[in-house]
Length: 263
Image 1 (tube, rainbow, N blue to C red):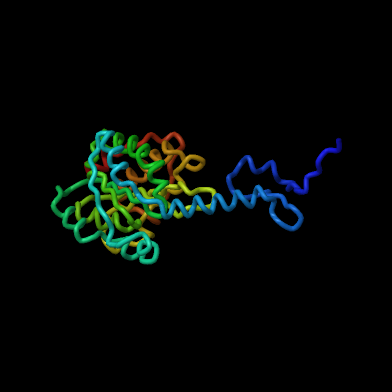
Image 2: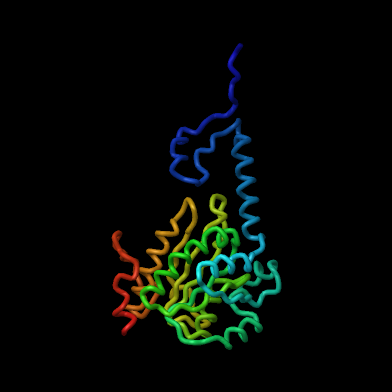
Protein backbone atom coordinates (compact mmCIF):
# COMPACT_ATOMS: atom_id res chain seq x y z
CA UNK A 1 0.00 0.00 0.00
CA UNK A 2 1.35 3.40 -0.95
CA UNK A 3 2.45 5.67 1.88
CA UNK A 4 0.10 8.62 2.45
CA UNK A 5 1.73 11.84 1.28
CA UNK A 6 1.77 14.84 3.64
CA UNK A 7 0.66 18.17 2.23
CA UNK A 8 2.55 20.08 4.91
CA UNK A 9 5.89 21.59 3.93
CA UNK A 10 8.12 21.65 7.04
CA UNK A 11 10.28 24.65 7.92
CA UNK A 12 14.04 24.18 7.66
CA UNK A 13 14.48 25.74 11.15
CA UNK A 14 12.16 23.31 12.96
CA UNK A 15 14.96 22.12 15.29
CA UNK A 16 14.98 25.54 16.93
CA UNK A 17 11.45 25.04 18.28
CA UNK A 18 12.78 23.04 21.19
CA UNK A 19 14.58 26.14 22.53
CA UNK A 20 11.63 28.54 22.65
CA UNK A 21 7.87 28.79 23.09
CA UNK A 22 7.77 31.55 20.46
CA UNK A 23 5.88 30.86 17.23
CA UNK A 24 8.71 30.01 14.87
CA UNK A 25 9.17 27.40 12.16
CA UNK A 26 5.45 26.85 11.57
CA UNK A 27 5.72 25.21 8.17
CA UNK A 28 3.04 25.69 5.53
CA UNK A 29 0.27 23.89 3.74
CA UNK A 30 0.08 25.38 0.29
CA UNK A 31 -0.04 29.11 0.93
CA UNK A 32 -1.54 28.74 4.43
CA UNK A 33 -0.57 27.58 7.90
CA UNK A 34 -0.88 23.88 8.71
CA UNK A 35 -4.13 23.08 10.52
CA UNK A 36 -2.32 22.10 13.71
CA UNK A 37 -0.57 25.48 13.89
CA UNK A 38 -3.79 27.36 13.14
CA UNK A 39 -5.58 25.54 15.96
CA UNK A 40 -2.63 26.08 18.31
CA UNK A 41 -2.79 29.83 17.65
CA UNK A 42 -6.52 29.94 18.38
CA UNK A 43 -6.00 28.04 21.63
CA UNK A 44 -3.23 30.42 22.73
CA UNK A 45 -5.40 33.42 21.88
CA UNK A 46 -8.28 32.00 23.93
CA UNK A 47 -5.94 31.34 26.87
CA UNK A 48 -4.70 34.94 26.73
CA UNK A 49 -8.26 36.28 26.75
CA UNK A 50 -9.19 33.98 29.63
CA UNK A 51 -6.18 35.23 31.61
CA UNK A 52 -7.45 38.81 31.29
CA UNK A 53 -11.10 38.09 32.05
CA UNK A 54 -10.87 35.31 34.65
CA UNK A 55 -11.94 36.54 38.11
CA UNK A 56 -9.40 37.11 40.86
CA UNK A 57 -10.12 34.68 43.70
CA UNK A 58 -8.82 36.96 46.42
CA UNK A 59 -10.11 34.77 49.27
CA UNK A 60 -8.30 31.70 47.92
CA UNK A 61 -5.01 33.57 47.64
CA UNK A 62 -5.44 35.10 51.09
CA UNK A 63 -5.96 31.61 52.49
CA UNK A 64 -2.74 30.38 50.88
CA UNK A 65 -0.75 33.31 52.27
CA UNK A 66 -2.27 33.01 55.74
CA UNK A 67 -1.44 29.29 55.73
CA UNK A 68 2.20 30.37 55.35
CA UNK A 69 1.92 32.43 58.52
CA UNK A 70 1.36 35.76 56.81
CA UNK A 71 -1.47 38.24 57.26
CA UNK A 72 -3.49 39.91 54.49
CA UNK A 73 -5.49 43.04 53.82
CA UNK A 74 -8.18 42.72 51.14
CA UNK A 75 -8.40 45.94 49.11
CA UNK A 76 -9.83 47.18 45.82
CA UNK A 77 -9.02 49.88 43.30
CA UNK A 78 -11.49 52.60 42.36
CA UNK A 79 -12.80 50.85 39.24
CA UNK A 80 -16.37 49.53 39.22
CA UNK A 81 -15.86 46.37 37.15
CA UNK A 82 -13.46 44.57 34.83
CA UNK A 83 -14.59 46.44 31.73
CA UNK A 84 -13.83 49.76 33.38
CA UNK A 85 -10.48 48.41 34.55
CA UNK A 86 -9.48 47.73 30.95
CA UNK A 87 -10.66 51.11 29.64
CA UNK A 88 -9.68 53.38 32.57
CA UNK A 89 -6.10 52.59 33.67
CA UNK A 90 -6.08 55.75 35.78
CA UNK A 91 -8.79 54.37 38.09
CA UNK A 92 -6.81 51.16 38.56
CA UNK A 93 -3.95 53.24 40.00
CA UNK A 94 -6.09 54.54 42.88
CA UNK A 95 -7.68 52.85 45.88
CA UNK A 96 -11.40 52.86 46.46
CA UNK A 97 -12.56 55.19 49.22
CA UNK A 98 -13.43 52.25 51.47
CA UNK A 99 -9.99 50.65 51.00
CA UNK A 100 -8.24 53.94 51.72
CA UNK A 101 -10.15 54.36 54.97
CA UNK A 102 -9.32 50.78 55.95
CA UNK A 103 -5.61 51.38 55.34
CA UNK A 104 -5.57 54.63 57.27
CA UNK A 105 -6.69 52.75 60.38
CA UNK A 106 -3.73 50.31 60.19
CA UNK A 107 -0.40 50.53 61.98
CA UNK A 108 2.21 52.68 60.25
CA UNK A 109 5.97 52.54 59.78
CA UNK A 110 7.52 49.71 57.72
CA UNK A 111 10.61 48.98 55.67
CA UNK A 112 8.79 47.02 53.00
CA UNK A 113 5.23 47.16 51.65
CA UNK A 114 4.08 44.04 49.77
CA UNK A 115 1.16 44.37 47.34
CA UNK A 116 -0.36 41.67 45.11
CA UNK A 117 -2.81 42.45 42.31
CA UNK A 118 -4.43 40.44 39.53
CA UNK A 119 -3.48 43.07 36.95
CA UNK A 120 -4.00 41.72 33.44
CA UNK A 121 -3.69 38.03 34.37
CA UNK A 122 -5.25 36.59 37.51
CA UNK A 123 -3.92 33.21 36.35
CA UNK A 124 -0.34 34.48 36.69
CA UNK A 125 -0.96 35.49 40.30
CA UNK A 126 -2.73 32.27 41.28
CA UNK A 127 0.07 30.17 39.79
CA UNK A 128 3.08 32.11 41.05
CA UNK A 129 2.40 34.57 43.89
CA UNK A 130 2.04 32.21 46.85
CA UNK A 131 5.20 30.23 46.10
CA UNK A 132 7.14 33.47 45.60
CA UNK A 133 5.92 34.96 48.87
CA UNK A 134 6.64 31.75 50.76
CA UNK A 135 10.36 32.28 50.16
CA UNK A 136 10.56 36.07 49.99
CA UNK A 137 8.63 36.85 53.18
CA UNK A 138 10.70 34.41 55.25
CA UNK A 139 13.94 35.87 53.90
CA UNK A 140 12.82 39.45 54.51
CA UNK A 141 11.66 38.86 58.07
CA UNK A 142 14.74 36.82 58.97
CA UNK A 143 17.01 39.80 58.26
CA UNK A 144 14.87 42.15 60.35
CA UNK A 145 12.86 43.94 57.67
CA UNK A 146 9.56 45.32 58.95
CA UNK A 147 7.04 44.04 56.41
CA UNK A 148 3.43 45.16 56.02
CA UNK A 149 0.57 42.68 55.83
CA UNK A 150 0.27 41.48 52.23
CA UNK A 151 -2.15 43.88 50.53
CA UNK A 152 -4.33 42.04 48.01
CA UNK A 153 -5.83 44.44 45.48
CA UNK A 154 -8.48 43.53 42.93
CA UNK A 155 -8.25 45.35 39.58
CA UNK A 156 -5.06 47.20 40.46
CA UNK A 157 -2.37 48.77 38.30
CA UNK A 158 1.31 49.00 39.21
CA UNK A 159 1.12 52.53 40.64
CA UNK A 160 -1.50 51.59 43.24
CA UNK A 161 1.36 50.24 45.36
CA UNK A 162 2.67 53.82 45.70
CA UNK A 163 -0.53 55.00 47.37
CA UNK A 164 -0.70 51.95 49.65
CA UNK A 165 2.94 52.27 50.75
CA UNK A 166 2.59 56.01 51.34
CA UNK A 167 -0.45 55.52 53.60
CA UNK A 168 1.34 52.77 55.56
CA UNK A 169 4.53 54.88 55.66
CA UNK A 170 6.74 52.19 54.11
CA UNK A 171 10.23 53.00 52.84
CA UNK A 172 9.92 50.76 49.80
CA UNK A 173 7.08 49.10 47.87
CA UNK A 174 6.94 45.83 45.95
CA UNK A 175 3.97 44.81 43.84
CA UNK A 176 3.40 41.39 42.31
CA UNK A 177 1.05 41.77 39.35
CA UNK A 178 -0.28 39.75 36.42
CA UNK A 179 1.40 40.90 33.22
CA UNK A 180 -0.31 41.43 29.89
CA UNK A 181 -0.58 37.87 28.52
CA UNK A 182 1.29 36.92 25.39
CA UNK A 183 0.37 34.10 23.03
CA UNK A 184 2.89 31.82 24.70
CA UNK A 185 2.75 33.27 28.23
CA UNK A 186 -0.74 33.79 29.69
CA UNK A 187 0.62 33.14 33.19
CA UNK A 188 3.48 35.64 33.46
CA UNK A 189 3.88 37.56 36.73
CA UNK A 190 5.72 40.87 36.95
CA UNK A 191 7.35 42.38 40.06
CA UNK A 192 7.87 46.14 40.45
CA UNK A 193 9.95 47.77 43.19
CA UNK A 194 9.92 51.48 44.12
CA UNK A 195 12.03 53.25 46.74
CA UNK A 196 10.37 56.16 48.61
CA UNK A 197 6.99 55.44 46.97
CA UNK A 198 4.36 58.16 46.79
CA UNK A 199 1.32 58.94 44.62
CA UNK A 200 2.40 60.40 41.31
CA UNK A 201 5.66 58.44 41.09
CA UNK A 202 6.43 57.57 37.47
CA UNK A 203 7.88 54.49 35.85
CA UNK A 204 11.51 55.60 35.72
CA UNK A 205 11.56 55.36 39.51
CA UNK A 206 10.78 51.63 39.44
CA UNK A 207 12.74 48.43 38.85
CA UNK A 208 10.96 45.58 37.11
CA UNK A 209 11.40 41.81 37.15
CA UNK A 210 9.37 40.27 34.34
CA UNK A 211 8.19 36.89 33.09
CA UNK A 212 8.13 35.03 36.40
CA UNK A 213 6.48 31.71 35.51
CA UNK A 214 7.13 28.13 34.55
CA UNK A 215 9.04 28.40 31.28
CA UNK A 216 10.29 31.89 32.14
CA UNK A 217 12.21 33.20 35.16
CA UNK A 218 11.92 30.74 38.03
CA UNK A 219 10.49 31.77 41.39
CA UNK A 220 13.84 31.11 43.10
CA UNK A 221 15.67 33.33 40.60
CA UNK A 222 13.06 36.07 41.04
CA UNK A 223 13.40 35.94 44.85
CA UNK A 224 17.18 36.26 44.54
CA UNK A 225 16.87 39.17 42.09
CA UNK A 226 14.32 41.07 44.17
CA UNK A 227 16.38 40.65 47.35
CA UNK A 228 19.35 42.13 45.50
CA UNK A 229 17.30 45.08 44.23
CA UNK A 230 15.77 45.75 47.67
CA UNK A 231 19.16 45.59 49.39
CA UNK A 232 20.76 47.86 46.78
CA UNK A 233 17.87 50.32 46.95
CA UNK A 234 18.31 50.68 50.71
CA UNK A 235 22.06 51.19 50.32
CA UNK A 236 21.71 53.76 47.50
CA UNK A 237 18.41 55.24 48.74
CA UNK A 238 17.00 55.19 45.23
CA UNK A 239 15.49 52.88 42.63
CA UNK A 240 14.61 52.85 38.94
CA UNK A 241 17.00 54.11 36.28
CA UNK A 242 19.52 55.18 38.93
CA UNK A 243 19.80 51.60 40.21
CA UNK A 244 21.64 49.33 37.77
CA UNK A 245 21.48 45.56 38.03
CA UNK A 246 25.02 44.39 38.79
CA UNK A 247 24.09 41.25 40.71
CA UNK A 248 26.80 38.60 40.82
CA UNK A 249 25.74 35.07 39.94
CA UNK A 250 26.70 33.83 43.40
CA UNK A 251 24.85 36.61 45.25
CA UNK A 252 23.26 35.46 48.50
CA UNK A 253 19.92 37.18 49.20
CA UNK A 254 20.24 40.06 51.69
CA UNK A 255 23.84 39.15 52.44
CA UNK A 256 24.77 42.79 53.13
CA UNK A 257 21.53 44.48 54.07
CA UNK A 258 22.15 45.07 57.78
CA UNK A 259 24.35 48.20 57.35
CA UNK A 260 21.66 49.71 55.11
CA UNK A 261 18.94 49.10 57.70
CA UNK A 262 21.03 50.68 60.45
CA UNK A 263 21.64 53.68 58.26
